[in-house]
Length: 441
Image (cartoon, rainbow, N blue to C red; front, side):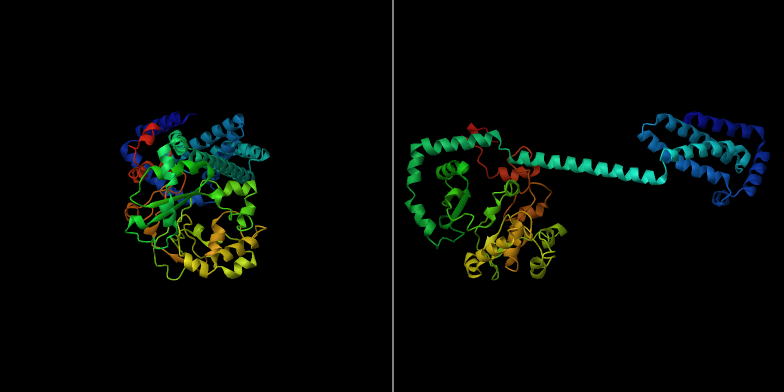
């Protein structure tokens, strides 16, 4: 019987009762019924038919869900019909304010008991329900994990994909590097620049002509970057562009981590688009080698999340709750670096981890070991993170010395976070002829 029909029947029965008895008799009858019926006692009584019927309905509803999920539609229909029959009995009893009797509910209780027994034979019992729910939850978690992995991979692909406009710019700059006679002349006039690169007095931050930036890139981008920084002026600042392939000292014998780079899995991990810059800034590090902004506001940025504390070397030398830091921007005191033999410390830990028992992958763990006790925490305003993946406090951005678009949503990509793109755009000269030719916007 549909619910709408049930409501109509209840309503009509209620009106018939009111028509059958005059007002004075209705009131007297109601009081007598209420005196003889205590709903709480009725539901708590172990012999209560009402309680038994309610318990059957609750269990049948659970079995109904499983029957539908199992596509046993006939059995689901039978359960649903019997649930409605039992609910009608309970509704009628509630309206007349008298307990259900065994005689009037015997058929409903028996029929429901037979269906519940059948459900148990179909393994719809409580234990099976729990196991099915657990399996359902596990399946949903696996689906969610798969979707999350796919989303992460798609985001990584989108982040590593070079937009057509930037690809065009690189090609045009490379062409300028080898075809523009004036540019080649400027590249040869590097005697004064070479002298600047060797002059250790270049440290006056208020005088641009006394500042030197060293930019390191790879073979693919070297010509384009060389052309760009030669063609354009930057307020008197000297910019040296180098390619990593020319660093003959950077080999497996000098840097143990390069041994691991022969492994394709490790290559994928190291070169997954993370960015690293090491600006040289005059700052008091209080005798420490490294200055960096700590990132241990959340537990996953503490040492125990990166290192294997079951290994005695790690357990005995490093506090598991020590703070990690943002390795994308560090300030180094190179004099103190040499005095403390930091390079030797780094090599020591890399050699100890040839079997990957101290940590698995990544460049951060050996850095955490090397600079443990040698890092000066900097004010967060020195390095504002998260502009490529999360919301950042506007006050931090306004005070920030370095704004870091770490994450996949770089401002020069279509997937960049729109509200942070202006922070990048204000430093780009979109009126530059080459940028206009390549439709960079």
